[in-house]
Image (cartoon, rainbow over all chains, first blue to last red; front, top):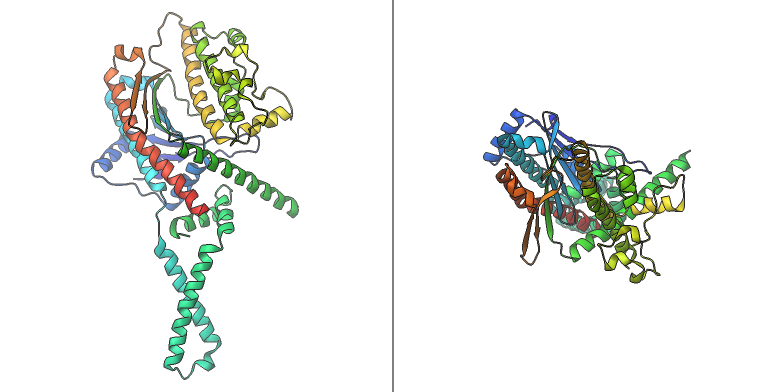
Length: 215
Length: 250
């Protein structure tokens, strides 16, 4: 499904004087409805690209006064849902579309399915393995650098030296893991606040860390 | 120039930290109060697709009074509904002022000073408003107060709901102005509401007009679908926010 063609996350910038809340819009037509109903029947899930996921997560956090979703059909807004964090939900349906119940039913089903899919995409997956890998690689790199700097002392290689190196890798692993877990509280907050900033590179790093590394 | 830029960046971050803190408090309130889910379904004349601009909504609801409605030529049958929106706004603010955990809490705030708390249906014209006025020109302390209020997550959430209801009332008013004889039926009102309390109680409310509507089955089915999917969607949304903040705070 070529989501990029019919899914829009509005991006009106807020100035210091005026706050504007954005929304997610689905621009549907007969073909897209068909595709959606097929995907739903086959239980295929939408997998968003990382840039879309990033936009959506920012949207979900920034829109503290409720998430708004619109469904358009032939350039006319047919459905609107606002989901408030405190558990209130408002659904609006356009009066004219009631004249065509069959089509309306299709749009309603697609609308809800798309919201479900998008919300499933914003969830953060817990991944501890990533942190483990990163720590191992860093410790190994550190040992290699130390080894290269003291190359003359390494030869001849004896079992004692091998055991010492292995011990050092474990020590480094433990140390680096501690550092990664404990130190970056301040740094994490800075990165997170970068989500709100227009600096997309910083925003990308923040989401990458939150998504992939459980720290 | 560099110094100026840095200073600006610092300000942005501190505002966002503040906003984040406010949101966390709000989130804490939501979770501790054990919310009931409330799903409202409406048929509307038109969905405009405008984004929510809190300042505009506040500015449009704040001046509502009997006199104002008469001046604007609002249809008489809708007067009470408009006034109810204004009362609700006043009530939300009174709740903020008397809540010790809120940043708007005033030490001098005694419940006696807020008749709206004792009687939410009180005639809004009879009480003196506590809300800061958005009508002043230039930068006055009241305008700053409005700005601060519009950064409060709890207030914003309520304001948005009121804004949606007002928009629907405005359409209903237009219809009635054009053709006073015409009955707008269920258009631009909440025709079905379901409240799901966490103790398992489910309350359904329906507008009388729905039962005579030619599309009754479709509308009731639409509401039913909204209830079923709404619960799941809200849970997913909340779980995501809690997850993000948990990772930041741990």
